[in-house]
Image (cartoon, rainbow, N blue to C red; front, side, top):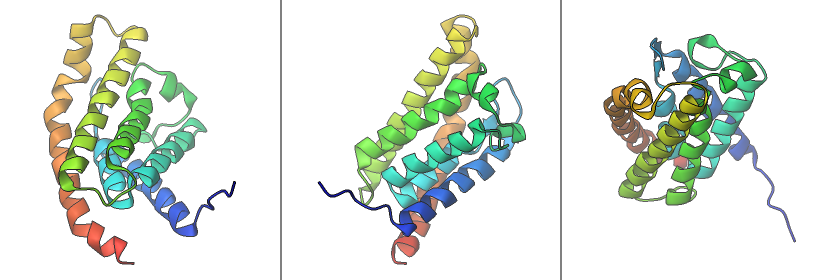
Length: 177
């Protein structure tokens, strides 16, 4: 069985994607669960580079943060952030990117499939993060949803729409290279 080699192009997209997500995480408005541009970064990276590269970018981003690099919101890093009360949302980014990849494949999918992939992935991220929040002592389900999901739905939908505009504008240019 012949294994597919990872190309320099794949590694470049993955590294740049992880960097974009990190920079987007630094754009933040503090709250119990900070408002950041991380989801925008994940949506844009996945939409531009494809689901597989997007998923790899998220994994690299989380690994960089886990080893202590300050790539998470508020310039935080370390395994403690991932095991903290809101760490489930960061880990839920893996689910977001994986669901996007499962729905869209490795790129070239229709706009509607991209929207469905992003929305479905976002729902998985919310579910994973909220369950983690509850397990970590975040109170009851209603207070967890009120603190960690309801305030973020509209901003996340706006970030999704913004990312789709970026994907449409840049995707054609990038893929022609």
